[in-house]
Image 1 (tube, one colour):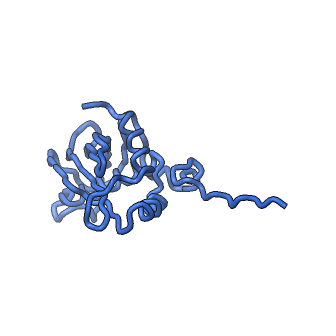
Image 2: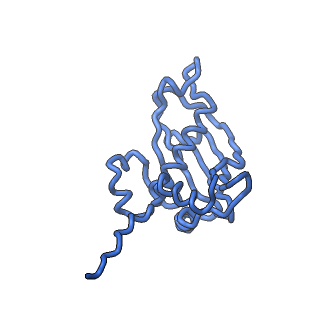
Image 3: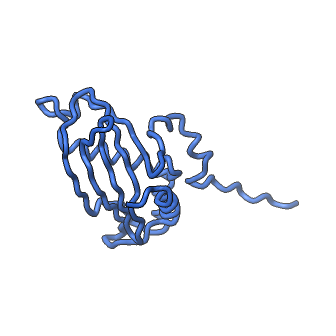
Length: 174
């Protein structure tokens, strides 16, 4: 009698894994050169004057980066498992961030967070991000995210590197 091999669990970048998410439509959409995530401004996002509190743009941009990964095929929970095997004690950290606040956004505005990869290096990924209201630029930024383990920079896990390099290839070159 021949033993059947154990079925392998689906790869974290598998279309089947992504399609299993019934709320994937909430992750925005891929566009040539990156990703766009719509965000509505709620009362909790504003200060006493009804204008978006500056730190909340960081949250909007983090959601944009996370959903960009989701739509290019990176299932973050599975990626963390793979990264833990490659580099125990790992973390993704924001290494640097440059922001320019151009205009205010207000309660009930619908904003779009645009995310585009700029560079995928050994231990870091650099992304350009814009928060827009229609054609109007609200905030513009550049974010460098590093992969570290046990307090030191480490090579980005292969699954993430492959997905980000593919997305970078689709991004317009500056």
